[in-house]
View 1 (tube, rainbow, N blue to C red):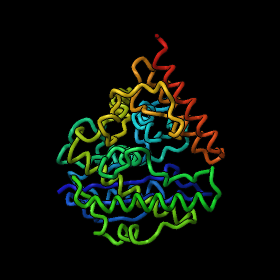
View 2 (view 1 turned 60 degrees about the vertical axis):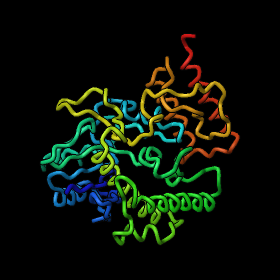
View 3 (view 1 turned 135 degrees about the vertical axis):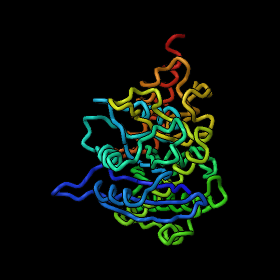
View 4 (view 1 turned 90 degrees about the horizontal axis):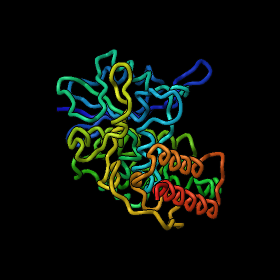
Length: 346
């Protein structure tokens, strides 16, 4: 019976002066039972734990860039996150060879040396090998209808800088608890996730999320690891019927590995899906993407992805405090740019 591993990896590894942040880890089986859940610190420790635990047929879903080939800018997969999921206020951080945050690449190399196979998600896994792929939990949250986020992602990560520090932490904790409540309802999903089968996962459900940053992040890492493990099970169970492979057309590296993200998707989130023309911006949509589900016909998907990603990055920046009027202005500007990109040839 295959097992499904979830890794919410801290991208920055340990240094002599600063230890790595915690990495959340989780394992579930085909029945959705949580077999293991916990934390490690540093790429080497995570690799040792995985290598000691995985076996043939197991699937590892890792929230970190595993294959990076672009010197600068964004990977194709990251641009496609913005174009496919931007309507839900989801965008991905840019990764390139110039970034020092290469923990995912380091982990991939250690796992490959131990016999784990990197897959891009486009084909079923070999039954006699352990495999790994890159995932992004936000796409699972908004891409799986079972969780019910039909309009926008839950804001359980960064603080809302338009609120006071105390209010923002209360809102963040509430969003996390609502997400966990919905995850508790996945016991009858296909595939299932049965949160109350392990004490760590059960504690996430029964204890309110703390307001203080460090203990909050500790819980959040475990939450994301469980979502990664469920993503591995979704891909194994349904393949491309329930997920899409972002970055599938990207140039491979010298060993033929493509830098992809395996992302659960609703039909309208799939790259290239038809969309409603965003002619009139929806100022109530703070994401600024209106009805955008995929690049409009005629738009350069790379440029479009950068527009969407930049809008999200500015809105969520820890260094920029945005009031509601500024959010609305960003929403209108992004929608107008998207519309202009779609009609450059008119």
